Image (cartoon, rainbow, N blue to C red; front, side, top):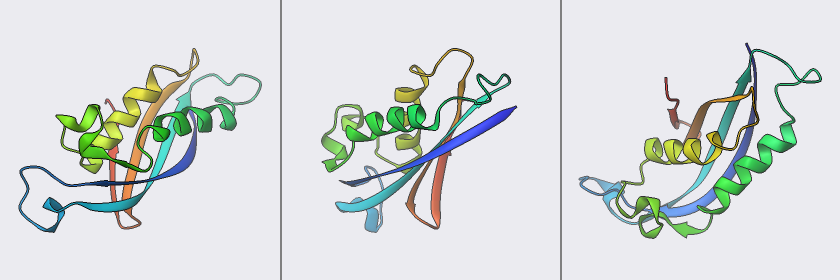
Length: 121
């Protein structure tokens, strides 16, 4: 299996619902996001074009960038944790992947030391 990944970033604010601690207060992050795509067959020597995967990521992140996540559509009911943000990004990108290429994983970091990931397996 061959894999590629691209990284992106977005800035947003949120607070955690039903949580006791400092993250129950509104605060912001400069989030880091990495998406991993895989394929068992290469097309022209590639899993897919890095630029195409980066465009898919940028489109997904544009909905989150400079927003208050708790008031954004998906997160009005879903707690905007790093885990749920990773799943949201996965859902947005997975359905747009080219034939023969699978989105394997999405990793979201609040800081360089705190990382959550989502994969459907």
